[in-house]
Amino acid sequence: MESKKKLDSSNKEKKLKRKEVLEKKKAVDEAVKAASAIKDHLASFPPFCHYDRNGLFVYLESGSGEQLSSPMKRYIQDLLKVTMEGPYGPEWPTEEKVKRREMVAPGARYIFVRKTSNANTNETLSKAEGEMTFTRWMGDGDPVVGFVHYRFVIEEEVPVVYVYELQLEPCVQGKGLGKFLMQLVELIARKNHMGAVMLTVQKRNVLAMRFYTNKLRYTISTISPSRVDPLLGVEKSYEILCKTFDHEAKAKLEDNSYVGE
Image 1 (spheres, rainbow, N blue to C red):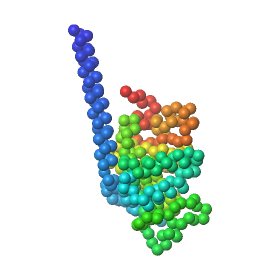
Image 2: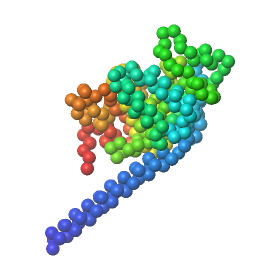
Image 3: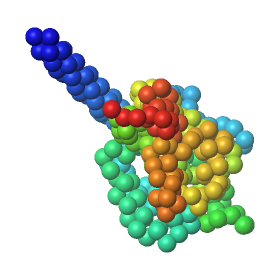
Image 4: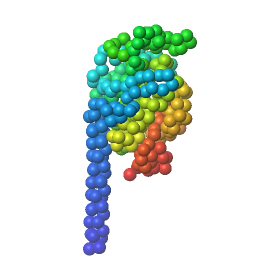
């Protein structure tokens, strides 16, 4: 009789545990779904829609992968080639195809950076001496000088914002804009109940790695190859970085001592 009571109690605990796990999974799925359904995340942050610092004035607008115009697609492809062909090296031809598919995915969300146009716009955006080559905006409206591509996804059962790309033309670099954009992404993540912001950085891209880890205090995630398996990590050309906002996200995405259930 006693053993039957223990068995019944154990079964009840297991059922409750399963119910908790399922409810938690449902809550995470719904959080990601709700965040992804919002078309304009900038609407919640009007003060962040303009940037006027260090002699630079730009404004931001939202976009989505399903609604990119042909000029915007070309612009993204060209800017990615200029900025990422070097860091990817021999892997770039394959990676470029991947990025073209990612660019127009239904879940892709964008923040576009536009520079106020003037009579000398084409001159100010042309290549400066000693500066890396980049393409000019060839579509309608004020010149686009950079963008952020991000998505709401689930990593290790944690809802996160994953930054696929943060790309800025040389003419707007070094003025604090990159940091500003990442802080905005972090605000969007918190507003939509995400547990972290994550991104992938090529090891060859030393400046980017330094920017995220030193300036923005991102850390190498436990799901990055170098932390999953150091030997495997040596073979991989990238690291996965993260910044977490709550205890569970930190435990699952940053803390090596975490053991899953």
